Length: 350
Image (tube, rainbow, N blue to C red; front, side, top):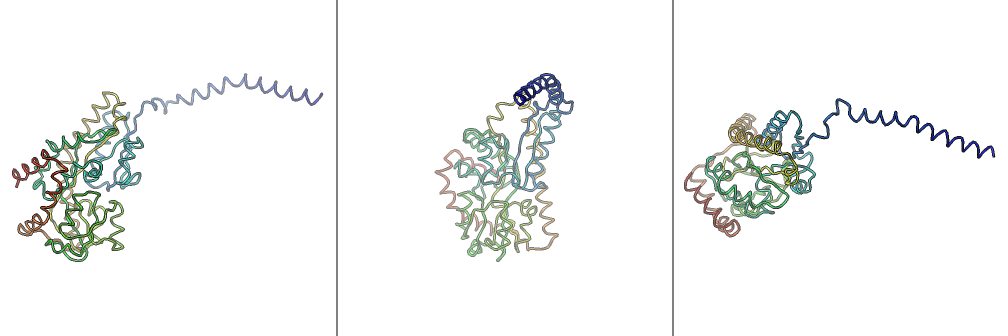
């Protein structure tokens, strides 16, 4: 009986204690929930922006500039978290991460979309856009708008960002004539047009993620690659190569993408701020991308670790002749409208 009485007393005491002190506990929790430092935290919007390049490249700087503008104009209500150098997702899985809502923004090289959306191959055509003005008109005119309209569901295409013309590096010999590619194994992005381009020149190819390019050069799995000067410099690719050919054979740019569901859930005010920030960032990168690449070329030359060659007009003509079959392969894929626009720009800016 004493045992039963003791148990009953214990239970009764516990109930009374919980009743008496429970109010203080709730009050304590409420005060923590509405701490001055935490006030408004539920109203914060976080944009995870993943990309694969270094922060001192045109895209890396553009992302930082965009993040700064958004933070300033929303008084910190929108925070853009930047994940550079493939630290969160790489160029093989960032698109899936975007459409699944794991991140909110990416800016992949346009070549990375060509396997999902074949019409985008038109931007990879070798020697398609002979001047920076031609690139700008392609991105901001009929070609760019048509391609944006051909994106799949769950993705909002917003704008194009600029980097620069692609050049070729190699370790065996300088790439001057098409025949020089015969013994070259080149790293490429996952693009049917780029693959056909190098096969037409006589090279073999392997699709390798950007962030693994250096290590594959280091172990001689590949002995050549194409990229912009900013990427060649920022990733130290030139340190594993002996020759750089300034060929300007293609243009590498980016398309800024956002998760469409995330975008639709933003307030009209936040959408307007983000759109304006992206527009200003696009203007900035358009002006500064050339300067950044030129600066990195000077730094590569100053390092004096590889020979730099410039294609002559005659040598360039031989490259153009060798890759002509790529145009014939691409025409039925890209369609008449896009191909006619490419030919128009070539004639206008040649």
